[in-house]
Image (cartoon, rainbow, N blue to C red; front, top):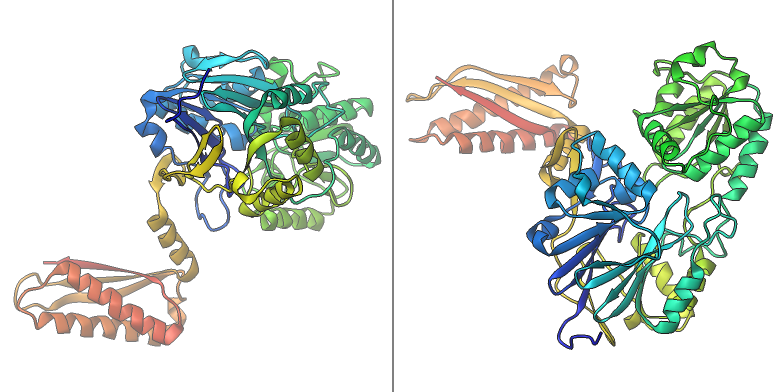
Length: 558
């Protein structure tokens, strides 16, 4: 197929670039759009009260009629967690491997089911025509079964997206990464490679997941009390190895935490998680009646989330399972950037109880699922792309990837460092940036999707830092203007009022003086009156305390 000389392929990251999480990648050619993934990002400590963060899909909603389908690389939360919020707005076909789609459907069951007619299981190696794109999945090795990358054959050339990957020569499920297929495409000619850059700063190669199984077995054999292992719920390979090790030493397994229970149930039903003994799983209600030395608990909470099962066990607030002195807790995950404090707090709770805590620094109970520098170099050499686009990583990871490109002979103009909403335009011999599209983050708070924006977050941060002061007064609404009652000052999170009489009295006088100055005018504008109270009282409190609480005037007029 000869390329149209006037048309370009656009690559637009709406998530997953310049950040870790909420992956969503858009490919656009003329009247055809395909999407890869739709994930979530977990909030950092600045996003007060926010449960999840998903990509802003305003651009996709405006171009819904041109979307030919959404393709899933694998079943991790940062790639599928946003789909229950994204897909109902687009109502488009989705494609993925059996496990990935099974995990997506489990998520939809918690909200509103997605039409079965739009859900399509794909097989690696079988191309799917999606508008102007011929999309073909290829197997990669990662920390979850059925992970794939994608080749997109377009009118301007072939583009390959690795998805999350590492080159694991001893994969748990025996499914090797299809390096030969990448090499074959490289021989045919590849226009651009979009590559996982998460570990681009790390030299060497990533350790095989098989090493974790060996380490887990060694720790399990040393444990005297019950073993509690916290891991990402979707790390099916690690869960499989833990169950196998438990069976070998005669321990039963209890799965705790909603997301962990959902993943384990789905993986068993689809045949991706194999139980060595059909009676090895026990419900959490029976844990209290079992000898602790005969039990392994698989749980969520490896990121120190306040409501996760491990955190509640550590704080003695779980209904059925608590951590006791002598128990072994294995943190089989690494903290996501920003979660280090929460994880550290949980570990301190565990030590205070008297538990033995095992982290990746003490034993190889966690290895990365992402490629280090030498694996990235291998893929680039096999694919031999004309252009490089690092994806799935913060800016430092992208820059680290660019250094790898330099070491292989690529110039700066051949490597695109993108931001959210960047439009990378590709033609057969050229890569350049086009006009940006609307992109960003949508915050999910409880049942609200997108109703909490920067203004609300700024208010929450101000409340958290300096508290709130409410001023209540009743005024006459007709001349002669006067104060009928108050002003009363109510404070929350600002100062302890019983010990701040002088400060509160001064604040009342400041409000009275402000009101009396306004009463001298012929007409009162109530909005202006409130603004003046905020300004004058804010200046007074800053002068006295060097704090800026949120000030809310409540004026009643009779």
